[in-house]
Each structure stands twice: as C-alpha cells, then as structure tokens.
Image 1 (cartoon, rainbow, N blue to C red):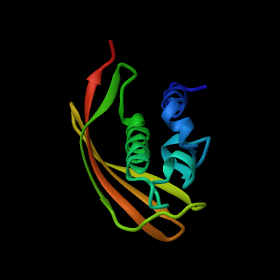
Image 2: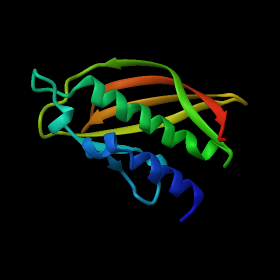
Image 3: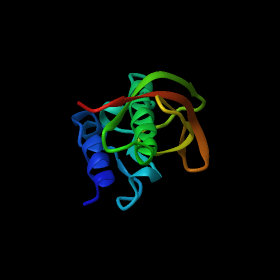
Length: 135
C-alpha cells in the first residue's frame, strides 16, 4: 500500500467517519471524494441532513484532496472553513463530496469542496488548511 493510500485509510478510519458510514467514492483513488448516506447520525431532528455531519465530511474530503500535495513529514489541519448549505439532504439519499485544491503554499492549502446528491448541489465549502510538520 502506498504512503498516500495509508494516510487516506487512516483518515477514513476515524470513528466519526465510521459512524457516518463515510467511504471513498473510488477506493483506488482516495482523492476522488467521499460518499455517505443520509441516515442515522447524519439526520437532524427535522429529518434532513445534519449540518454537523455534513461539515465533518466536507472537512475530511478537503484533507484527502490535499494529501498528494503534502510531503511525508507534513500534515494539514483546518484553521478556517466557510460553508454554505444550499439544499437539504433527505433520509435515504446518498451524498457525494468532492474537492479541488486551489493552491498550496509553504504553510497553507486552499481547497474548494462541494457536496451533491445526484445533480443537486447541496453545499459548498472554502477550506484553508495549515500545513504542519509531523512530530
């Protein structure tokens, strides 16, 4: 298994990701995005997609997209995220989240993340990640 695949697997193996049933859209390319169902912990009291659950997967997907831009001695942590939720997810729907790295500087990564259900855009995030050295 490549170092990129190991790091992506570790990020997807966090208990929160398991609880939300998040998985890579393409297991052979973890940078391709993440999918998860609107069920269980991902549902709010109104019966729609919980914004906190969505936010966790938006942040995860942004990290996975940035992974190929990180040296083996680097990690990235979110220090700013701005999200617009545009449409509700309904019980039983499957959310697909994809990300694009806009820019990587020495200490920052700028990532745009989108969440869709079918062809419906449900959310968009702008994420700034701090690049830190792994100790």
